[in-house]
Image 1: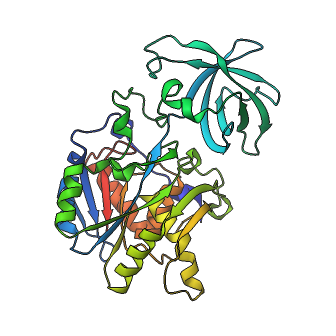
Image 2: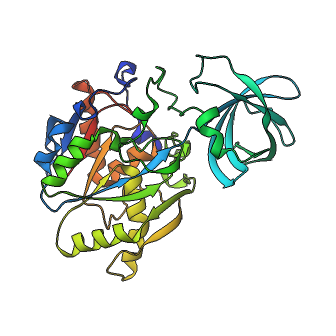
Image 3: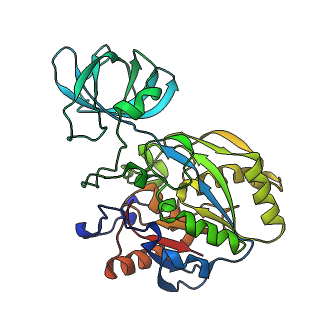
Length: 357
């Protein structure tokens, strides 16, 4: 299978730069897997496609203020730091920009921004926060050892990182969080959940729809285009995920009673199907799980848990697009994306949604 098979032409003006208000005003493309039929609605109408007893499973990971600014102590050259994975309270895997010439032993001074919004207030160096490059990773990233535990300071010195295709500053950082985000750790939002409002959640609950939560802390590698031309040669970066016992119990009850398990977003799919791999070895019930996952889902993958999927529209050549093609069938996803572009849907993180049933 070729990565180029997952390319498509997208008019740049369809890349959503700002979120809609209210959240559930976004459009909703409903794709039926049984016959490929497509319907056009709004996300606030999703109850029309849900049944009492449906179990929606969503990722409650919360985006941290993972974007920092600083400069090289030796030269004064500016650097941008994106925190990726916490190794311990002072050590993080990061991406540096520019970073190619920043080698092991280089020292960085971290700048503090009073308002956490780049460009609105001049940055000033902090004498108390600096870091040393202690490792160059195989993927070209860096490992930084900070002088102090950095995570407690992020609300003061960091900003919420937006994807590189979003160029409009975000006025309210909470708009890049789901309304149920609780567990800090992601560097990007689980965007399928951005369409839910508290009112919509309450309305669905009153209609008999159940909710349960998992955690997957999203790494930027999730969104990067696949570089290998052979899809199967791609290797996913490991991300931390958790399927708690209470969610496991809810899923096992739903499965036993013949009710649908619906994933809110591709990250929820990856958590559920990571746990679901054990079902292929003879186990009948899901077991709770907490730990790393590097599950790569592409066409041919045997889904064992997820029966319907709420998702956004994804970048060409991305593992996310490959996942939805695996779930719905590549030909159907190709037609759905062509239809969405023809109908001028807003795409990507702040864009419209798709419900695959």
